[in-house]
Length: 432
Image 1 (cartoon, rainbow, N blue to C red):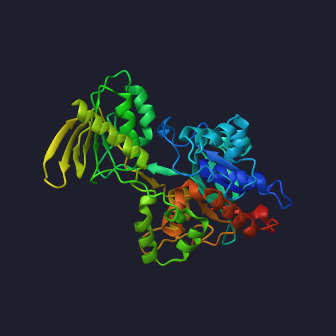
Image 2 (image 1 turned 45 degrees about the vertical axis):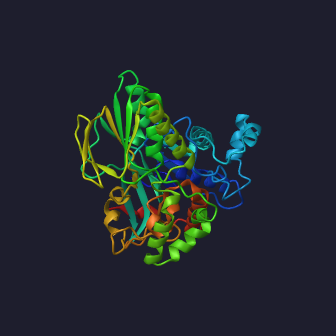
Image 3 (image 1 turned 180 degrees about the vertical axis):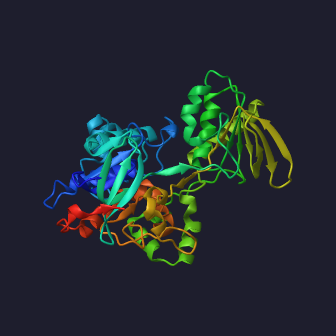
């Protein structure tokens, strides 16, 4: 790569809600009196998309609309959800709705509306395939970012926002009849003309409950078997005091806490986000189960305190009771695993810098308070993470709740650490 290649203050890897929020923060920063911050983002999807496979038209957000891409950082921003509603002609209707939690499809439309306003700083359909450090002496001065289309960018700082990866249990392989809930709507479209007879849904969280509800409604001739280790679906804890775990100040407290305290906090408040279901959906599923018992036709079957012990590619599922050991064999047209997501490990993408990212005693990446990776290589800029920092920054690591504040902190860190003038000998730097 030659020195003629444009140098950006920030190159963002991925363009989901987190890096979209960063792009907005950059746009707002660059309208102010300070020195502009240049940036470009690379996204492998052909257009903006956020969990499209789970955009069920009846599903609502589990976070207040006030925790949009900007409001917690800048309440007067033109990129707010309220301004989106005004532009869409629905502001009065939304106010009359008296609801803090919009439809998920509506919030996705808000994201797309916001993304269109900053589309000059993103290249869609472009996947990052390699990052190479560029040295000035012993110091990493830049990062050369190479993309799948052969293009390349040079960055002073990287912001990695590649999102979460669908997680299947160990030993389970996805196939025509076995898939993760992230594919739900795409798979449902393909199944509509197939007259399926039975679905098996594995999991006890919000997504599992939504999948069970949708399949039960969409396929009135099919049986839906929900399998989970709990006695029943557990309600999400969205009480006012518990929700303080999502406050910006909670990130500071969590980051400073010792490991025993961090572990306890995650156990105490896991029900605010993990394996928990909105109480309204729980009540709806219970009504369906009860109604079917009254009618004598049970299509929604709950295999609680149970687990799948064997699943074949043909869709045969052996379900075992955890209390009695009794086994039930189910022949399913599809087995849907609503078993969560895991953060992507950014280090393979970083090439020779990957092994130089420091880890704690349990093998987790070390991350500074400003979301910078800690490395044993001297970096003039930084490698920032948007996600994958739950062990250091708490439960909001990959959630929308703190996104607006987090991107403001990352941007401020970049500004504070920026080398105002290019170092002497810039043309002599080399990639190695």
